[in-house]
Length: 127
Image (cartoon, rainbow, N blue to C red; front, side, top):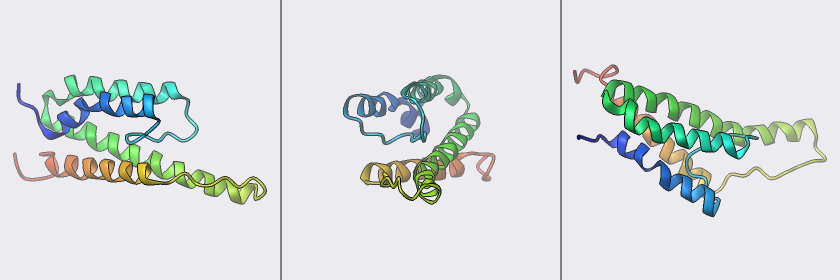
């Protein structure tokens, strides 16, 4: 069985899950205001996708492209929503949670987004 880089990234999903579940380090997904079961479902979908979706390189790269785009949107919303809430209720100011883990999350997701775009045969001439 031949693996590509994106498939290996999705095979490492249990490592990200262990970091989140046991050490509360979230490097993979930030869903603002979501319960933990949504995050667990996300990890499950990504891990299952590593077995089935990546049999076809085009479909796998499209999945990674869509997943990482949504992931970056959620990360930006998790920073933006508390800032908007400050404008609505200035007495209830909470610090925006953006630190090293979120920065690593952004770099990992951005790298996967770029790699999935450039490795997809639909978007380049490597057919």
